[in-house]
Amino acid sequence: MEITAKEANQRITDTIVAAFSTFEKAEEAAQYHSDECTDLEHALEFLPDNHPQRKGLDDRLTEARRKRRIAKETVEQYEQLIELLRRHKSFTKDLAQVMQAINVTLGKQAKRYYRMRVLKDFGESLYYRVPNNVVFVPATPAVRRERRVHSGISL
Image 1 (cartoon, rainbow, N blue to C red):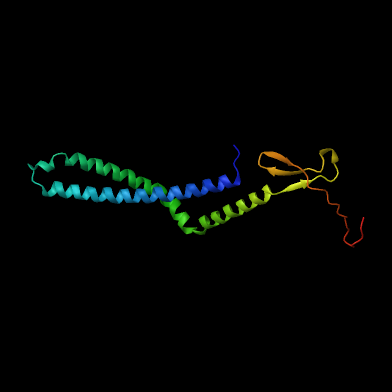
Image 2: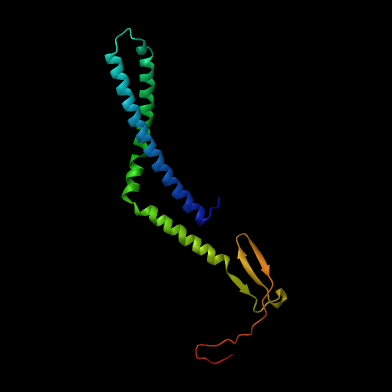
């Protein structure tokens, strides 16, 4: 499985964003379900035994506690990773800078060309490197340039 540098960078960035999102949602869910459990326990404690709203509270409490447990376990699983990412806050900024550098490099690579110097059977064609294929472009009129050595003497 091949992956481009741009795709790899994007996947890493997306994974970090998803990890933070999942962690934050799990924290919110754990807090919400904890508060819900407290409310249901107080309702069970203070409502009289024969009160109509008391019916089904124990099932709601069981379900709320189950959801709270799932959310707390998710928080526990992500805690170490999120702590590491928070310690290295600059990593995500560095990834953004790397993405910009990759885009600049891809732009430069897309503009590269080659002018035939010796193999004239291809003509004076220029070809541009496009990812996964080569596009031949008609040559511009040939401009003869003299080659010079460092001393300035023409060859």
